[in-house]
Length: 273
Image (cartoon, rainbow, N blue to C red):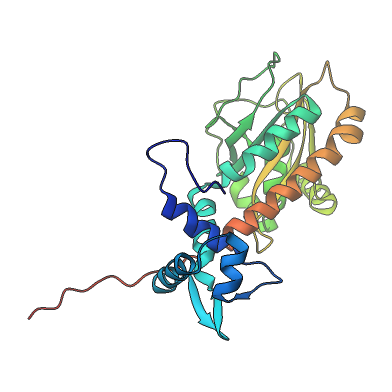
């Protein structure tokens, strides 16, 4: 960390305080004033004032003749994590998946019998149906929707699919109950879904579930391709392993966000004299 900034707005005291916090390491969980001064290059009186200030703020405590960090330091990192939405967390993974497949990739959630797109990273290709954030399609005819429907209890999936679509789209594939039940059983068993021109001609995709820390499916992610350019073999043999890897990484980040500690601070109460 630079001890001196490059402009008039640089606050050296803040830089020194952060330097003290980051000086603690697994091999040095408790540090004396001498240890801290040596690790940071600060004068002992300066290191002492910073440590006592951090102790008063609750980030450091005195322990075994030295100083140790407190769990409140987690607030500094979790402030960043909590400031991000789920889709901010997923976006870097989605963009990396696009780079590796050269295909458009999306994340969707279930809304009635439709899916709604909530995140997307695309490549400039001509496709049959335009997609943007907020676009909705009938769930049963999309790989994204099949994954989400398969995650529901069968009775709930039946109830959901009894609702009319609000997408305004008439899909190519219109199965009877026995057909879609068999399809969802297969998706549930293998853990991913594919659609091959079931929503509209020319659209082929594969999707996987995204889970939170409890294992609950909260969304789905897909790789979408043009049927004239990408074969089923390419989709399954090349793109599917990359998709499953990305889905796992996104789910891990979702779990971290979900488990981030949310500390509540007591509200000051005015006391009447």
